[in-house]
Length: 363
Image (cartoon, rainbow, N blue to C red; front, side, top):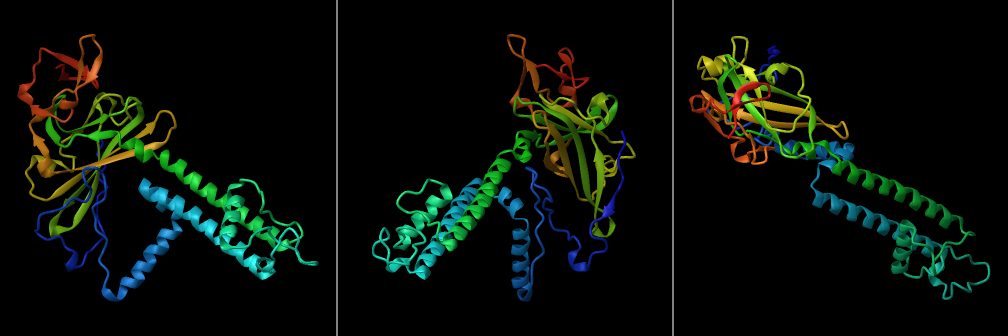
């Protein structure tokens, strides 16, 4: 086991107003992996500038903003963008007809001599909206069609088609990207709600368990963690840790189809040795990261969770979640996935090797 000890103080020397108090600590990362850190409050005089800067940053990252929205807002943005595009060019077609004098022509099939009608039969805003809709969706011109002798109409037609194609490409790309997001695949990965400390291969280890809820396997699975701990002066330090999978060491797990238990040895080199083995009272939060590749696409996905001191059970081992049915087929017991028993409760007569060790038993 190689424990990375690159630790540092977050933010350097903090002012006294930002020092951590003795109040009960809230999570930095929620159990489902979302960041719970609150942004800094803005003073009343700076609120407008902060609000404007936030919107500017959002507009600069419009693609990321669209992908991060919920589906209902994406669908609303889809409908609103096309409706706004149709209305904008309906106004422009109506304005063109007004400036060209087409609205005063009673019969567009027989206009006054010397008058060129830019778009036939645009006599109202409703007709202009209908023509904009036909142009954008390429339904095909019937009664209303642009005149080849009106350069303004041809130019406006080209502008609408170009902007319409760009809008369609953007919206279609956003739909495809949102459907294929690797984060959605990470939703099928579940961590055990509690971590345990127990003996594994003669060593005292911190153990966490993960399960892939879908039958589609994941490959190149790695688990790491970051320890956030309060030190002297109540400064928040961060230290990286490594987890391994039995005899694979730091090598990634090549195949993730059944529940896996990952181990971190609690020796004197471990940053968790002091808070877990020596009884240090410093507050800490352990954020665990699981990264994997999707077998079909090769896209990387990440699942996160966090464990506080009260969510770590001592002198326990996970109950095996893999068993056999009546036909001899392997099956996962969901009710035992996140269950931890005292290490003395294991029946050594029913031992199978899962993940390369002999600590799991069949139910």
